[in-house]
Image 1 (cartoon, one colour):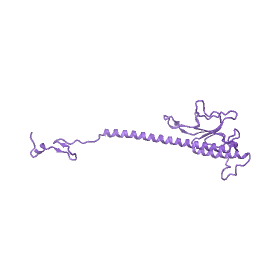
Image 2 (image 1 turned 45 degrees about the horizontal axis):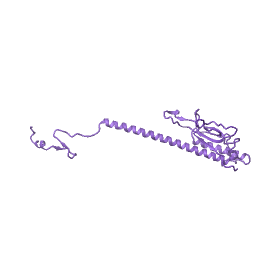
Image 3 (image 1 turned 180 degrees about the horizontal axis):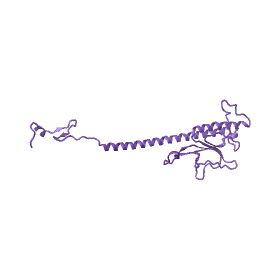
Image 4 (image 1 turned 180 degrees about the vertical axis):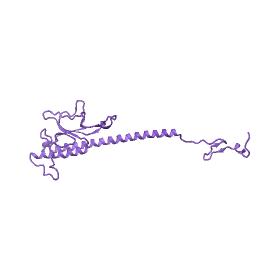
Length: 228
């Protein structure tokens, strides 16, 4: 084979590619470069985008669950507080009649007979037969105001009830005490996210004003000891 004058050594000694130890480059052949094609880059971006969307969805769900747990915990603490107030004022708090704690309240929550005699500027709640009733009205006025501020769209029912749950074991707002029997129960509900994730907009919220609404929390009030 003919060779170009002065290039005879190239045919006898192949070249090595610069920067790659041991890579041999034959005369007339360029070294092949390695890298990613545009299609590969686009596919990687799409996969990354789906992964990020999934992470955002999980974060939103976690925040929603955390909010619901906070509302449930707050409602339970306030229901227990009301039960303790009723037991502490047992002359009227556990009575079937003339009980200022009993009633059904919807947003905006307000006591049937608002009283502020327990306030700093109040004149006192009186003594004798009117004292316990006035104290109960004042406690209920203050408690309902805090519930209304803490729970969105709150609804509260405090009543004597023989069957706080229906035949399917689901809580119900109706009170079915017969002849003053039954125990006093505190029923609470508030606006919360629906468990049906296919719903969107306002339909994704369960409100206490809905026809099929049910209490989110029921706490029985036991009378405690028999002392006065």
